[in-house]
Length: 155
Image (cartoon, rainbow, N blue to C red; front, side, top):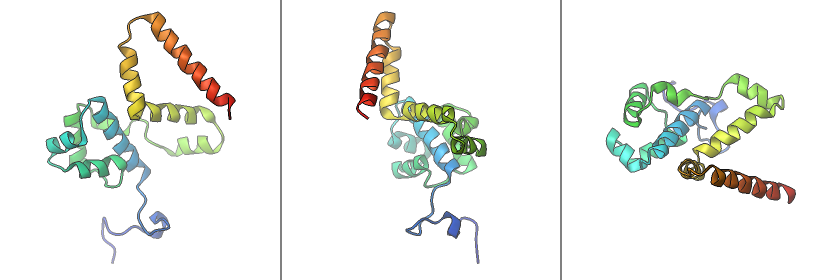
């Protein structure tokens, strides 16, 4: 007898018999993490505000546990965003089709967004926008560009 929230069907099982996170759950979780990090909030602090453990916040952020509607509403309130924020740039069938057809713009955009969501990307961007000297900013961009070109030359 099957029940809602029971074990995953064969299409959702991986080699070890564990359910793979749904891509939408992973996306929503990554948006929670992105916003939390943007605010400089720890998983523990977010958990306290929601009455959760930091381990539960981790599971939400990784998409391992689904976030229910009321919890998503609470997260939006605590993180100061709309519920829609968590679904922005969500994976869609069209995005998958573009990737399969070899269209690279979407892949490039995804790489950039993933970088901006990372700890390094977030710290780099926060620091960069505090630089007020336009010449210094341009020099940093040129430095990063030349370092990236040097890395590509060794491939």
